[in-house]
Length: 268
Image (tube, rainbow, N blue to C red):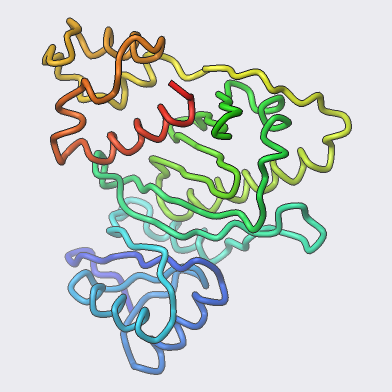
C-alpha cells in the first residue's frame, strides 16, 4: 500500500514480533491492503482500521493499540527507521523482554502517544539500585515506583510494568523501551558495585507539575494561580481532586491520568 498525502491512516501496534507476524499473515491471506512498518506495526486506512482490528482480534492476533499516522514531514525517514529497528535482548539478560500492551494517542497532544508495557519479571529488587543511577529520579519505596523525566517524556517504572507519556511516535517508544531494558540489565550486572539508594526523593519540580495542569488560573482550588497550586501539591498542602477542570473536563483526561500516576508514584 502506498501512502497518499490526502488520506488519513492509523498505525496498529502489536505486543511482540511473533504476534505482529501472525497479524500480517492474516492481512495478506485476507487480501487486506496495508503498509508494513516492521514486524511490530502496520499502517492501514483510517476508514478500515476498526474492521481490521476486529478481524485480527477475532483471529487471535492481539493488538496493543492504534493511533493516527500524522508524520508527513518525515515520512520516508519514519519508514526507513522502522524497517531497520530490531528489538534488543540476549538470552542471558536479567530482563529479557518488555511487552507493549497498550498504545494510544495523548489526548492533550494528538501527535504524541502514551503507552503501558510489561516486564517479563518483577524488578522490585532493582528499583533502589536504579534510584542510585538515574539522575533526577523520584523513588517511592512503599509503592514501589520510580519516576523520572526523559526530556519531555514522563517515565514511571513499577515492579512489573512501565508507563510512558508523550513519546513522539511508535519508533520513539520502542527506542525508549530498549534504553530502559538496557539500563535495567546494566544496573543488574553492575549491582555489586552500586550502593542501593532507599531514600525517597521527590525530584519532580513544581514547574513540571504545572505543565500538566490546565493553566487557566480559575482559582477553583482556592489558589491564586495554577503554579501556586502546583507548588502546594508538591509539598502535600493541596490535593489533586481540588483542581476541578482537570478532573471534570474531558479535554484534560490524558493529563489527569498522568497526574494521578505521578502523584501515586511520588507518594504525595
